Length: 207
Length: 207
DNA sequence: GTCTATATTCCGATAGAC
DNA sequence: GTCTATCGGAATATAGAC
Image 1 (cartoon, each protein chain N blue to C red):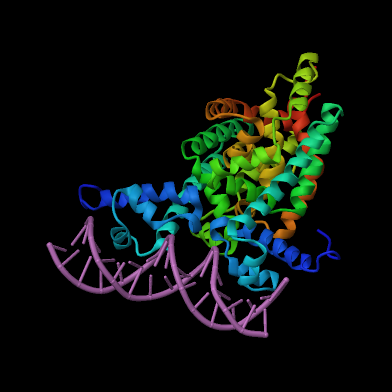
Image 2 (cartoon, rainbow over the protein chains, first blue to last red):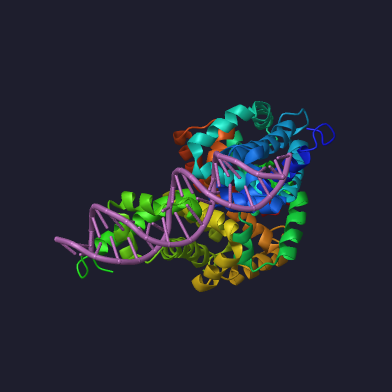
């Protein structure tokens, strides 16, 4: 909790930071306790002293990542702004979040694919549930005729796709397009502003 | 090659099929030779008789997946159809491909994230390069004023995102939206027709 | 709390019979 | 080509001193 109350909290934080790095890069199976220890500047024994075993440590990191994703997702989608504003804010904040923690989304997607059953349990623990307010808001705009007829779930998938895919597919994109890191970052910067506009243009009605 | 010429080809095919299943689900590090052997209905020793080691086997599966993705990608993007037709064909064929081999994209993205350096070598072997014809075609339509001003790379990323993300993020989507497999498949079926229309609407000019 | 040294488990790979 | 049995190394986890 506090570095002042408990001096060993510093070590724990170093471990957690190292774990984020190693788990997100190599996944659960590929991660090595030795490498986490090295990265944290300690040794394996101390690692096991602070966290009973690999699985415990992994669980903390995974739930932490999931929690961060959830908070941004729901606090934006379930606030009370107009639909288009909400889409703009969401895309911008989500891309920002993923840029600052570029391991999050790939990590979560990857690990959920490895073990969907076990890890879906974390979803319930973290309290993730369908963004009901946002769904109703979309249906309302359709009824009013301001946007095309689209299934709310499809729109949400589109928003998530356009925001998150570049980070999951970063190596693919760089490889296919022949980009270096600098070019890739420039592309991401542009997307912060543009993704929401493309999304809105795809659903706006024209007369 | 042929099951007739070489009777052991049957075993090899069983191994390859089993490897696709296990590697795509668990990744390189998480895959177990034992499980591949079980899945193929043989034992570990025979596995190593046919394929020297884990890495060789993995390399074949990975390059195979990459090759399949590449073929669809480039044969569509570099053909000589009008832009909008091409987008329609691409989205439809790509989603179809990923639906039939739902492990492909997640597998490739995941493994490239784990080891970008080593695996980018495969990209070169497989002959993947920027889709130049498609890029020029987009720029031409911008010049003619039929579509909005958009960087070709961004449009390509949008197309890939909307087509591929649902498969990578399947567990996330199912979790967040509370969908079962049947509902998810229905959503995918709709996307085959709709993704290209949303993409086109996002770049079409209106007067 | 932190370390060195060691036990234990797991898994890729090989030897050798058939 | 296919099997059983086993080796050898690597990685997780623990014992025990400081």
